[in-house]
Image (cartoon, rainbow, N blue to C red; front, side):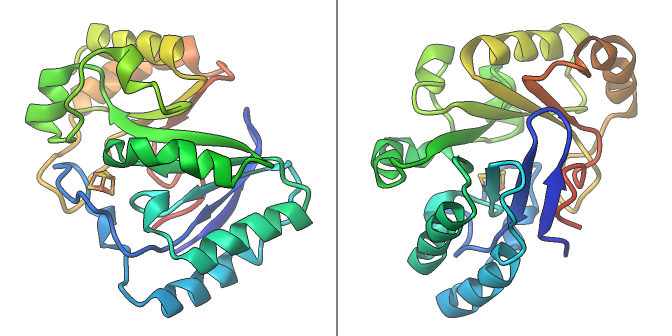
Length: 231
Ligand code: SF4
């Protein structure tokens, strides 16, 4: 599995895919990547160190993902991220987290106060019924202002039966209104029960993609390895 890459478009940054103790939630119906985990903290640290060793600081920004939430990374890995970012002159760090951990974010930001910390939420959609009944995301708030309170960025998931041009546009517009940056992921076939809908994806590509593809505040991943990490 590729765990280090450089994103050299729009918001340029290095990205590392680390391994933690595993997603605390594991119930999102579209997800199978939470399988990238281990309860062996030492092994996780050794793997994570070998990935972090690639970081050069060339863009002054690092995104850290770990098939779950930053709070599932071991302490030695967290300390290493901090020291490598200091050493390489990296000022912006992006972490991701499930909504469940939101109340822990202020403390994490305090711990990383020498950096510009950006927290990304896997929101998938603002549509409550779709998000909770189809995706089973576990975010039981509806108000975009409340949902975005602790987060700077969000992921959205498009390309599933039931989504329409209007629903996807609405998510993008609300996303740009409530977060600094958003990332749209197009559903790819995996081992979960949710499958990509070719027609919805075609509609997205025809009517929505051209409108936003150059938007600096929006990343669009047509393929789930679009950032260069994963398999
Ligand atoms: S999408 Fe994220 S929060 Fe949901 S099960 Fe997968 S790893 Fe966990």
